[in-house]
Length: 600
Ligand code: C2O
Image 1: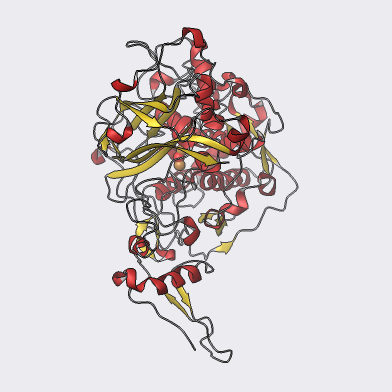
Image 2 (image 1 turned 30 degrees about the vertical axis):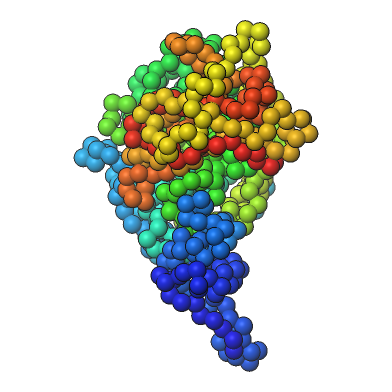
């Protein structure tokens, strides 16, 4: 038989590259691990001999890619050459969360997040066969019956013994284990690299599956196959306060109530979908208008292509901490994080429950919030805009998670199986409606006449004149060259102009937010709001886990096509980009700022 066994992964160099490329190519056909298949004679009983190479340093593989990629200009292996993220057996391969949480002595929830082991083996997932489709309902507008069932189901969950896989606490811990370092990529040959389901293209599908099982477990507990979760309809003016059903009831204890919420943000306080730690001093009308613009921005302007909406590629061998272009999706970094922090109790050292990812699952409101986040995926798709499509990369399609299902069986589920909600037998109440309040909330175009001229070129340094990495301890203004000016409609239909802020390094245990403005011509003292066209959006993170247990890194993308139209600046050769630190940015650094045309 002919077979070349590669040298030990630790000695990978340029000279050994040929066999390494064969290695990467071959393993592409396998489920996980770096494997070599050898060509063998038909009667050789070593047919499909496989060699599993654990712990390959992906950066050394890159060295071998003939100089095409180097560790500095392409920090993660191209997804096309990698393996999907594969969750190991959650019962036997879980370690207790030990980081991502500051003020350890002050945590109010346990950090022991591993699921109970009831000695089950992982089964493949089977699609539900029932006829009923569960219809998720807006939490501010549920019928008496829907609300009553929901409360009964949550109460039943809370009544289970704590170590039952369906208990309220075990369900809450699922989030902590998947977020704060419970699982590693051991099944892909990387036992030292954790799995992280935030900050990448895993965000939407992972949370869809999580809610799918949560909903079915609740339905089973009250023996109701029609049981459906509510969604917190924060994208609709009528739903912009914490829904009533989650509030404290002085007469009968409410199972949907949670004591760890910010008391300042109870109704009638309107949610701030662009929350950045501080209270906004504004009228309800403006807050509502700004919220609608924020939803529009996350779904349309900044979610114009697959990667901008879903987040960057994340594959086996990638550390949750990456450098460069592993970007966070528009909704995840936008409305989603804003609400987490806005609800979390600011008098707690760790902003429990919603304000910290280790504890978020302890507030029943978390699931209603995520139900709406999941609905955003559906709405984004239903807009029918070109470019609004799910990733098709096999490494996204085949990424998998393990959950306890409603029958207490352990099942493995794949991203590819959650794309179609009808196969999962649930939908959203207003799914068929094509008009949503925020659909018309594109920020109003600037009036050209009243517009002040852009800062003259001499005043502001170009990106090339900056010394990267830059620290965002103060406002940063820079001019960035655009790849093209005055693009025609036909050109715009082919590619989206995107501002890329890469290599954002920040303290993973902190709440961080900075805002991005483009071609902002406002004078000193005037503030741009999310309703203004110059506001590109924000980058926000709530406390997380990180590979080196402190610094995390991510990237952000902001759509410029509409922004430049609305600010009458399509003809400018440079875009003036202003980054405004809001909170937690004193030691945040950025390694690169550029503008690119992203094909749709
Ligand atoms: Cu898993 Cu809202 O976070």
